[in-house]
Image 1 (tube, rainbow, N blue to C red):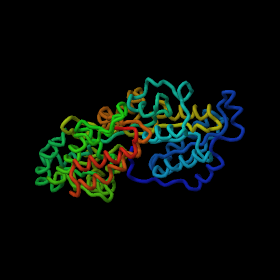
Image 2: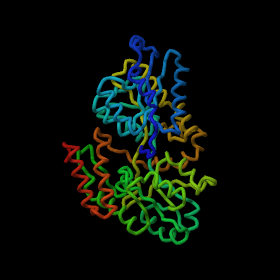
Image 3: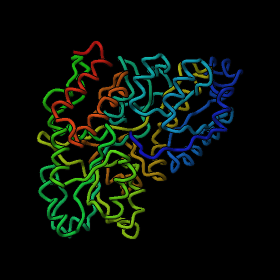
Length: 423
C-alpha cells in the first residue's frame, strides 16, 4: 500500500529496541516448552490515525496471555524497511513481529530475515483469506507472513459535480475523457487529477492496457512490450486533452486538496485518503457527496494494484512460539473486525466481510468492488526496486520530454539491470 503522508516515529521508544527486541533472556525455555510467555517486541508501521488502536490491540494480547509482555514500537512507514534490514542484518535490535508492507515480504524472506510459518501456530484458518492477500505472504513455495489488511486504488468522485455536469461515473478512461468538457463548462472544474509523481499510480493504466511489469513465471520483463507504451500514451492524452491536470511535485497533497476543494471532480486514490477527502469543503458537511468506484478501464479492462499489510516473524527471534501466536492474534477475524469498525480498514478474511458491522461500513462498501478487481502483483524479491525506474519516466512523458515508447523501453532497460536473470 502506498501512503502519501509520512507518520512520525516514536524515537524514544525505538532506542529501547536495541535491548528489548528479540524477546527477553528467559523466554527460550518457555518457548521450547510451548508456553506462551516472555517478551514480544512488535514494530507497528500504521499511520498516526491508526496507531492508537493498534497499540491497544497489541496490549490486549497481554490480557489474554498474562505471562506475555508486548513491547509496542511505532515505526515511521518511510523508515521501516531500511530500519528492519539494518537491525536484522546486524543481528541486533530486530523486532519479533513486524507489520510489513506486502511488497517487503519477498525481499525480507530472500535475505533470510523472516521465519517460515508453514505448520506453525501463526497460520490459522488459511482458507478464510482473500486469495490475493494470501498470495503476498508466500515466496518460493513457503509462507513468510499472515495477511492483516488489504487495499487497492479506486476512483474517488464528487457526486454533485458529476450530477451538475450531467455525466455518470466513468467506467473507462475514454468515457472520462468524453465527460471532461461538460464537467469543465458546467462546474468549472477539471475532470481528473492524475498523479504523475508516484510509480504505483502507473499500474492501473498499465493493467488497463493488458500489461504488467514482469512475468515471474517465464522470467520475462514485459513492461516494455506494447501495453507499457499504451499506458503512457493514455496518461499523456488525458493531460494534453485537458481532461486531467497533473504535477510532479507532491501529487499526494496537491491532488487531495484539489479534490477536497472541488477543483477536480475525480482522483484515483486509496482507502487511506477517504477520511482526508471528507475533511475538504466539498465533503465536510455532506460526506455522502463522496463516491468511490473501481478505476476506469483502459482498452483491455480495469485493473488496480493490490496493496496492504502483513505480519511477519523475525527469523532470529528468541521467542518463536509466542511471536507466532501474536502474529496469529493480530491477523485473527476478531482483530480484523475491530480494525474495520474502528478504522474502516479492509479485512483480508472473507468471513469478516459477512459481519453486519463490516458489511454496513460505508468505506468497506466503497472499496470492496475495487478490491475484488485488484491485480496481484509479482511477489519477487526485487519487487520494490522496480518502482524507481518508472518514476523518472512518468515525469518525462507527462512533461513531453520523452515519448511513450521510449519511456517504456527505458524502464525495460532499468529492470534488466535489477533482474539480471530475466530476458
